[in-house]
Length: 298
Image 1 (cartoon, rainbow, N blue to C red):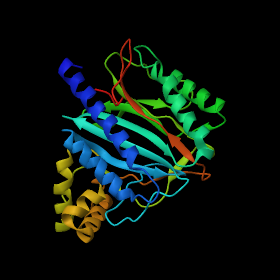
Image 2: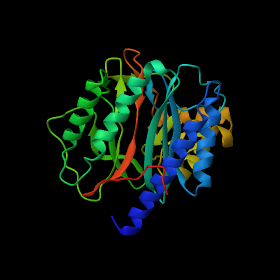
Image 3: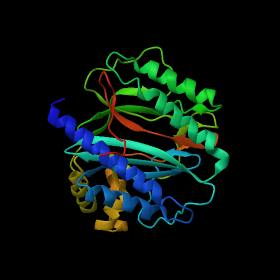
Image 4: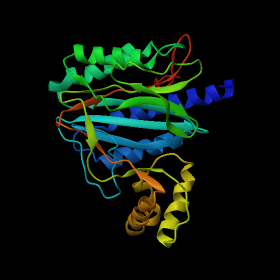
């Protein structure tokens, strides 16, 4: 990466880290989830960054991709284990970060497991490291705490205007694995659970990404697609469209675009045994001294 691009990546990470911690401060009993998400996204814009993907709050046995629609009345409840996932970008260079806010002391050990796993993995983002070895450390750390890593979720490379690129950063040991190279930008996100360690799609998607562009006949679908193209290929929330185009037009247009393969839905991901899930995530610049971009520091 060029020096200028590295600076953009690091700036995006700093803003994402601030937004993450700002959002965490809003997660309190009886808080309306959609208000928290809107506030985080507005915070990112005011910091001078773009939204890399919709802010997401996944509660208890949901691990990821939970994002409120416009009229969603979901609130934070006493005892919830709340995952907050936030992304910001500068000129397409992305900071991706997450943490867990625990409103039930009974589950402190579960939250600590994913946090420890991320901390132990953080020093490993050096050139020549096999990603399978990172996965082994994550798995070992979470297992030692008495929990299971979520096997079918992983970290990922971060491209320009691309959230998920190679290499995949597993949360378990794998025999065949990619090797990190100098200058790679990646996100590491350990998930720990007291369930089986597997997730599956559950519920209606409110997060989408662009698939294959093709002609569409429906005027509603064309209007929705025109708006989607403003997001420069990055994931988007149905809520964003509902604000501008209305609920009915948005839902009709999204359904048509999904049917044609123009957009890809990303439904909420739930632990298959209804286990509670915790998550922590940072973005890294691979170098001899790994750089965490998403720390909340100036």
